[in-house]
Amino acid sequence: MLDQLVAFNKKLSRLLSWIGGIVLVLAAALVSIDVIARKLLNVSMAGADEIAGYALAISLSFGLSFALFQRAHIRIDIVALSMPFKIRAVLDLIAMLAFTVFIGVLSYYAFNLVFDTFSNGSRAVTPLQTPLIIPQSLWLFGFLLCVFCATTLFLAAIVKLWRKDFGGFEALIGVKTIDEEIAEEVFITDSNNGQP
Image 1 (tube, one colour):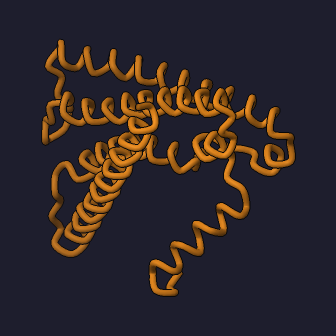
Image 2 (cartoon, helix red, strand yellow):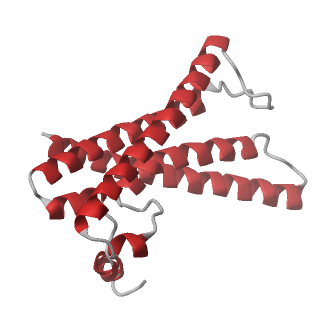
Image 3 (tube, helix red, strand yellow):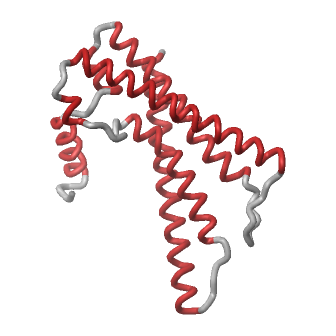
């Protein structure tokens, strides 16, 4: 059951990371068009920078969970990989717990902000006068999903450790080995027909 939940969360995180990436590219295109229009036509699209800011915040929160599943958050790999498995496992669990708590605290304050925005009916003080509940709710959703994914990963890792599935534990929350990094790069290159 926990493994299926982790697999579902991974798929959802991948989808949201794609959506976040597309939103970010569209925002960059909008800002580029605005800059070119200002330079060549002396016309400005009101709110392009505001929309880009929302896109950046939303895409960041949407990408957090996917980075977690890819084990892409920053760690001191060279030190961790040189340690015995038992020490590494304890450090991985502590790191995962610390990450979960940190994102949880961040989500708590984000929730308070969204709740205040909703209670006050706040709008952006810009020409668009965007109801802030829209971008902030999407931003909060990304954080809450990350908390949920981190919690399920932490619990699944403990279960794998309990069952002595050390390879499964490493695959969930362990530091990527050099061989795993190379295998990913080779797969990416192969899937692009030899083009890096």
